[in-house]
Image (cartoon, rainbow, N blue to C red; front, side):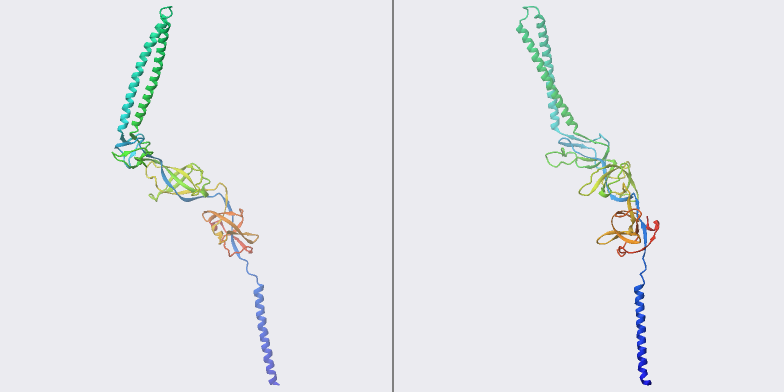
Length: 393
């Protein structure tokens, strides 16, 4: 009987051991399934509204306020030239003398024609006075019947009228000769090249003896004798991108720097706005006036302009870290009623650690400070408000 009870005890122990084991495993699974995951805590910041007021760096170009390529008005030879590259000139200053023998010949011919016309007019004037006097005497004598024949009186009258007509024609001829002489005199004045304004000669292309001609010369592409630029005042031309083309105010001061003086800042005043966007570059040219009385700056320099960017209306801002990007969308995570929402946005300009956003947001909305696609839409979260200092606003 003892031998029969031993297997039974073993079976009972094994069964109890197995049941205990099964009971233990069943309790762990329940615990794992029955315990809820902890609710995540998300740092949030409020969407703010303000007018954008920042500065961005744009390239620009310095140009002479006035620049002229000086061509002669007549074809001639250079007799002398008194300026060279870098010469400073005053308005009206003589820069070069030209010679044109044919112009001198034309002047002599015009002078001769004028003298001849004047002599003929004087002769006709004297003849008219004589014939008019004869006619007046005959007319007076004809008052006595039979003293002067009617035919003689008529002949004298016609002679005076013919003299008067001839004199008028000669006067017109003399005026034409005088105008021709004046024109030739003006052309002779073209043989003296004078500075159009106060400035600097930046280029010289001729020497004494060179044959020069007008810009429209039929001999081919003419080259200017000299270039003169006014540099005491410069134009700073800035191609402003289309997205920055609002809020530009004439009279505003703008700072810029040039590579030649890397440690210094210069300033210009917005003076002219194109009000038209170049369809090729999508930029709007804006000109600034720059005082360059000391001559430190030069035309052709490419400065870096600290361009002010302004919005005429307030826009919305969120921390830069709040914007999440995937291959499909750019979005922020808004927290509403303790649940997350993905809101698609478009980004604008950076302002410190905040970024401009456009989309379905409103001022005062709470968004996750750290946007990530790992925080799925519809997730229940606990929010924690962060300070403005923490978000960098």
